[in-house]
Image (tube, rainbow, N blue to C red):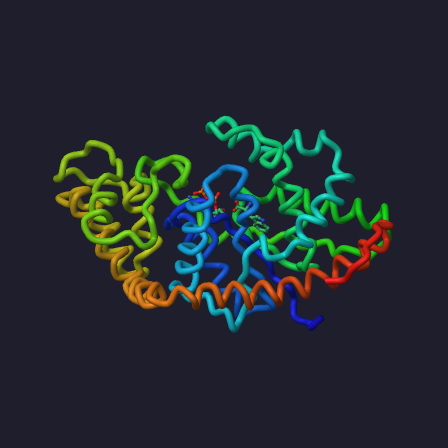
Length: 330
Ligand code: ADP
Ligand code: TRP
């Protein structure tokens, strides 16, 4: 193994990716491919906890790969793959599960949230953090860049690594550092709540034309009149403008809010222009990539091979230490 730090993160191909995903996760993933030995994967087993439609999962997977590649992920700089291409992950997840107290899963906030939001309370959803721990631990990851909402799952991974090491031998698993991405606050959706696929309040990264315009124009604001001075920091439109505009533009727009005579309609038009420009190059690149479906396949196939090799190096000593009989080698 090389001496660079191993960076690992995953994203579920559970629907179209939105600008909350971009600023909360993807942008950092893309930046960090330069900073270590980065592994990024599509958490498709995790997606099965909330989606039972094979065709849709396949389509979403392809879309997420296209999105990442268009936005600048470079498969020559990182290992980009599908979770389902690394069977060692589910193998390790089972072993970790045998060391996990039910009470630890019962404390899972994401499970409770998801069930409260209408997802079916299946066992996969309940034990989701164990599979996520296996994702992290199977590559001896050092750094796991994730948003605040994933903090508990990273702590569970650290906890389970310690339990396995204590039960079967030190150094079988590496305890990862946490790395909570703090650079961005929660991105609000068009209704002002956290932007999320499950709330139907997203602005999708690669939406365009009339449909994008409609989305931006639907952002909720208060009912101040055009001529009234407005506080930019209380406005959802401005919260989004801040993500896309450079400092000068941000300040100019904030001044216009404060001085009055500038309506939310104006702000929305500026936001629409900013989003369109920000993703203009990526949009073109995505259209090019779309013409070559076998490339997507090749990227995942190559990434899968590299990820499996690394996972096997970690898994083999664990099989031995746990006393599991195996008549074959990968
Ligand atoms: P969703 O809520 O749309 O289902 P996920 O839970 O799949 O999104 O999140 C994928 C990644 O995107 C996570 O790392 C999460 O922290 C980040 N993320 C999702 N929504 C937002 C948001 N509104 N603001 C900031 N980051 C977000
Ligand atoms: N739970 C993460 C999310 O919903 C996705 C994920 C699965 C993940 N396994 C991971 C993230 C391992 C980081 C590391 O966004």
